[in-house]
Length: 467
Image 1 (cartoon, one colour):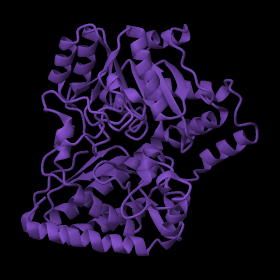
Image 2 (cartoon, one colour; image 1 turned 180 degrees about the vertical axis):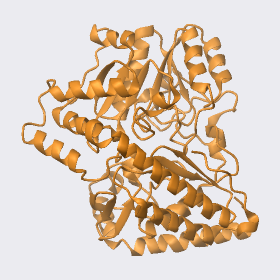
Image 3 (cartoon, helix red, strand yellow; image 1 turned 135 degrees about the horizontal axis):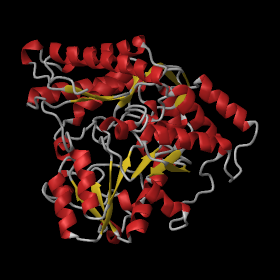
C-alpha cells in the first residue's frame, strides 16, 4: 500500500476514529478489564487477549454469533483462533458433552469413544496409530520428543515465523523482527520470549518456508545430528502462506535421505482446510502429525498420529507419551461428535460455497477501491494480505503493513463482525453454522473499509485471489 505522508495521516485518523467507536460501544468490557487487572495478570487469561484499544469480553455464543458483555452481537469469524469450526453450542457437540458429563468427566482410563476417534482420524489422515493430548502445545512437544527418541539425535529444524506452541524447543524464531531474524540465507535461532535458555535455542535450527536449499544446507552442516523437522504444511502464523508445488514431497524425501523424520503441525489446518487437512490435500504423508484447535468442537483436546513404525516406539515403551487428562472421556465424546456428526462432507461443501462467496466479494471491493491487496483462502480459513505480490515466506510477510490489517479489524468489529485481533498474523474461520448473510456482512464491512482507505478504481493494484 502507499505510505506517503498524506496516506499515513489519513490511516492514522481512520484508526483513531474507529478505536474511539470501539471503546464507546463496549463500556462493560472496559469496566471488566479494570476489575480484572487486580487479580488476572495483564487483566486477561492469555497474553494474546491483550489487544488495542482494549480486550473484548464475551458473554455467550450460539450458532455463528457471539455477544459481548455489553450485548453487542457479532458474526463470529474469530472462531477462537481456529478452534470453533463447529460454531457455538452446536447441538451434536452439546449433546455429547451433556451425556458424558452425566456419566463422569474423568477416569484416567480409556473409554470406547477413544477407539472411534482414533479410527476416524486414521481414515482421514492416512496415519494408522494415534495418541491424545490436551493442547497443540502438548502435541507438538510429544512429536519433537518422539523424533529425538527414535533417532537418538538432539537437533531439530523449524521454519522461520511458525508457531508450534509454547514449549521450549519451538519457542524459537516465532515472530522475529528484521533486526533479530538474521540473514535471509541463514536465519537466526532467535528466542521468541524471555525465559528460553540459549542451550535450548542452539538445538533448534531455522530454515525459511519453501526453501529446500536451506534445509539441505542444514542437513549437510549437521550430518547425523538432526532428529527431524516440524512445520505447518500451510503456514498460519503469518496470514496464510501456501507450500510451493512439490515442496512438501521433496522435503520429506530430503529429510529421509538424511535419516531425519518429518512432522506436520496441523493444529490449525487439520480439520479447517478439509476433512484430512493439508496432509490429504497435498497427498504427502508425514511421519507424524499433530492436531488440536477444532478437533474437539470447542473442548480442549489434541492428537498425535504417526506411521506404524514411529508409533510402535510409543507402544513398546521406547517413549512414554503420558498425561493425566489425555483421552479424557469428555474430550473424546466431543471429538467423536465433531468427527462423525459435525465435520461431514456436506458441511465442507457448504463451507466451500461460503469461502468462494467471501473471496469473490472482498476481491470485488479491493478492485473497486484500488487497494494493493489480495485474498488468500485455505478451506474454512481466509485473510486479506495488504501487499501486491504473493507472500511465500516469513520475510515477505514482514514487509506487509500491519496498520491496514488493524484498521480492517476495527471496521469489521464496529460493524458487527468479530475477526481475530492480531492483524496480519491471523485468519478468519468459517464455521459449519455460518450462512450467506453472515458472509455478506463481512463483505459489506470490508467494502466500507476499502472505500475509506482506498484510492479509487484508477489506482487498482489488486491481485487475483489465492484459493
